[in-house]
Image (cartoon, rainbow, N blue to C red; front, side, top):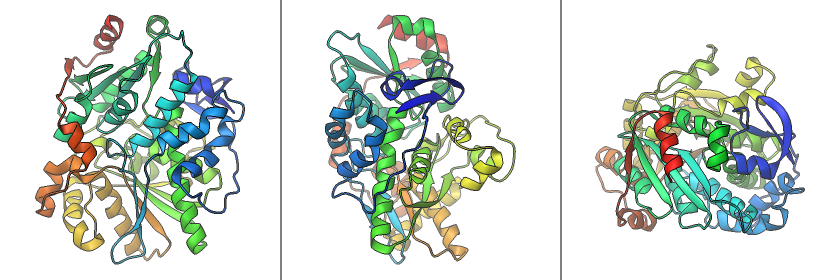
Length: 428
């Protein structure tokens, strides 16, 4: 499989796209074509489905022989599709990995893929990641103590929950975490500037682990496909998805799965009050804006990077707007949905999952009776300071989060400027 930049340019092998993260022209890598798969049912395990779904992308890759073991390592835990209480709806639980967030799948796939591609004499590769909450912890866990790699995490100071901050700062060793005096959009712009700086990259080999990286995005196709194929095998119908989104990575993965004929119907995006996407899909010109802090902090994104991929995959704005819809959910509604979820749906929801639950309630109120699933992107214990007051009970802490809580935190402050980041990268 070859890949091209969303901004044009020559095609490169997929191995090169995974290693580079960002294209030289600043664009995002996308596959040159869509493999159409004829899979009638999910494989026995999520790892087996992932291997079957991803194999066409790696047929001519140096990773072809290692792909099965990479999938086994990345998908060593399940993504169960659980029925919601009192309805025919589902929750796709994506939070059973080592940092209790959906980012674990993609981060582990990328870490294992890059490690498999690494030569014995290759220089140390710095994995640069901007995070609004969960990405950084997942990447840190996946690359922690992995020989030949170091990780640099940028996150907005005060912009994540206390337990998320602990998950970003508890690693040490080859992981350095920086609290940036700015928003996630600022962190993301700083990271993209570094990845686009050819002079810097001659001195510091860099790769990305945000969802701008195709190596993060591709594996996320697998769990959408696994769930949808199960529903089609059980009911003969397509599975429709409500996806909480900030930077559009998970949504892009669902779009990819649908384009590969993997039994997915409608895709609806749920955002918080940062409504760049709902405004666009309602017909306004696309206009990024500064993000605002909300309860669903991992979605506090005003300039979603993966929108560039969505535009590249569609003929024009009308075609893109016909492909997806998006709805904004304010903090008051998020809090109310969290409070009602145990009785109404039989689940405890994190703030991000709550946005999707509320949007699904809107869909059902219009009389839609098709099979729907909400993507549960993080364990509610990561947001205990928000969830517990709303539901008036404690949230059990998974063993993985307890282990991170027990580690000492290590971080450094950083000014919100590319120059400050470049100095740190060059000093390591």
